[in-house]
Picture (cartoon, rainbow, N blue to C red):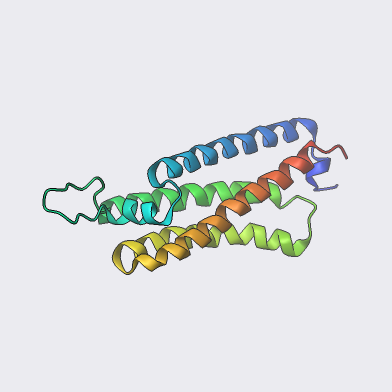
Length: 161
């Protein structure tokens, strides 16, 4: 029996295609939220985590520093949620026909990036703002891997054997 995405039964292919599209929509909504809250800029991301710095006593803080409880719930929800997303997507992608080294990288890298991305937010908040570069690099790798895995999987699921 061939365990390739291209050889899956039509009903299973339709189910997996639908599931991947739902994941893409969900990730897209998350990226829209990220854009709305940080404008995808280094400075606004730091402000989102560390709060607004005020220079005058008459100014007020637009954003307050993330509390430990806020960081805990954000980290907990994202590591579990995204871990499950990447696990389920990885189980689909495992059956793709791509180079074994690329496949190995794309199966493992996003899981490492989840921990790195959300761990680095703690470092930005409590150690040094410069850790924002680690957050940016790891999240870029994580999201790039997600969309590449989805694209390859969808392409092979839509392909006839």
